[in-house]
Length: 120
Image (cartoon, rainbow, N blue to C red; front, side):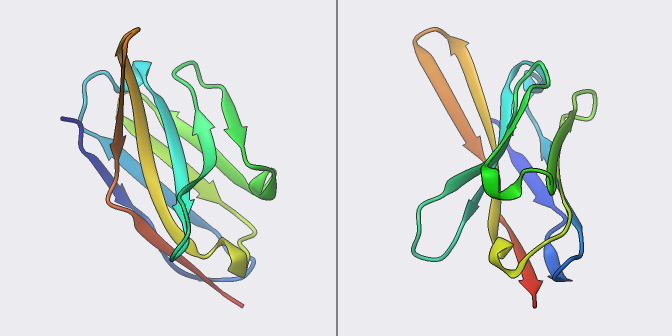
């Protein structure tokens, strides 16, 4: 069972920056895709950014140019650098790891969630 330990959330003023970190316990981290999701109260979790095992990144349009996802495989860590934050970015952010050990099996693991609050 993979465990994901998140850190780096908190309170920041609009226009400021935060960096979220997520350390994975699994030894197969380098071959798995990693994602950051957000979730507002009463709403479904939604994808914010993703990075493949090969380093290809994708972002939801609302954060393009402001957020950067990256990974450090030797440290088994994925980051989400959030710049030019806006109040509407306030949410709980979750780290997610997707493992595909066989063609018939897909496993997902989640961090504990990290609250990001952006004040106006």
